[in-house]
Amino acid sequence: MDDKSKSDKRGERIAKVIARAGLASRREAEQWIAAGRVAVNGTIIGSPALNVAPGDQVSIDGEPLPQRERTRLFLYHKPRGVLTSHGDPQGRPTIFQRLPKNLPRLISVGRLDFNTEGLLLLTNDGALARVLELPATGWLRRYRVRAHGSLTQAQLDTLRQGITVKGIHYGPIEAELERVQGSNLWLTFAIREGKNREVRTVLDSLGLSVARLIRVSFGPFQLGELAEGEVEEIRTRVLREQLGEHVAALAGLEFSAPRRDVAREASPRPLANQAPNHVWRAPDDEKPANKLRRKFRGSRRNKPTSKEPPPGSGRAETLTDRKGRSVPVERHGNAKPAPPAEPRITERPHKHRRRRSDRAGGPRPARPKGR
Image 1 (cartoon, rainbow, N blue to C red):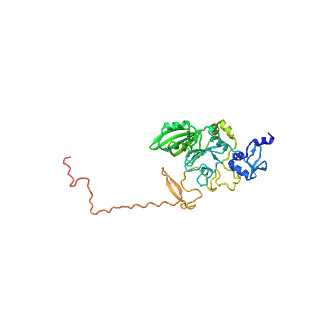
Image 2 (image 1 turned 30 degrees about the vertical axis):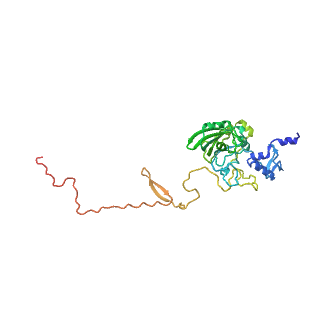
Image 3 (image 1 turned 120 degrees about the horizontal axis):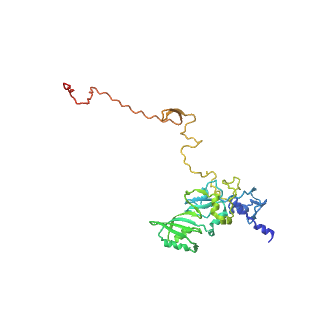
């Protein structure tokens, strides 16, 4: 083997290096390479079949490639009616359109169906996503299912040996019947493969129709009390402990690199045929980012309403505190109208009105003599 072939096998693929820098996915990086926008050591390349070493200088549109991002993982509570995709030709909403703008470029670890809800893992490292999706990793995916039909626990126990449906074999499944409510059943499903529509397909073969499907855990990560549509990041120390040394080495993770919370303003321009809703960005740049929910009452600053009085229209009043002291105050706004005066009721004296006596009528009795 000559020196040239040895040099081609060292390092990592150029598309993978660009993706790990947080600029684009591997497929988009390959499109950039085909468009002649990527250069290695000052030479424009035309094929992604190239490995680069840590010492090579990579640039895109003449700008140097930024440093690789720290590996990060996010928990996302996916609602129903949202696609796990970067874009949809039919214009349906996607999860990446609903994420806050201050997040880095993210990809999903696996997918959830359009009508499936629950825990979805998001990461900025494509290698980590691929490793966690592999059945060899052995991470358990647990679901809660509400289905229509009738079923016994004995039928569910047969799934521990696996099942073959329409020529597709599904591995061992841990299923448990929680409760029965009329014609509805609540089940728990635990699988390790995560094939396309696996839970729905297996239950359909048993005569059940799935009405609701919720993923409650993925490996060591739990949905918990995470609200629908909310995102929560796993701390680096916890992430390193939960993944373990084997997964970290297999995916080549980086936990010491700096993190970037906001996408670079000078990132390479998108391709002409690239969709505007690229990855985590919203389709409209003018759309405000999702913010924390805060209860707000009243008008906002610098936005006076018609009910607000002009400046300098305060009026002085005096209040009395609990100890009887006078406290001067200044009030703004329209003065409250004074309550209407209650009508004063006066009695007209009746003529020839006799004063009633407390005693019975008649003359005062005479005092007895001798006393």
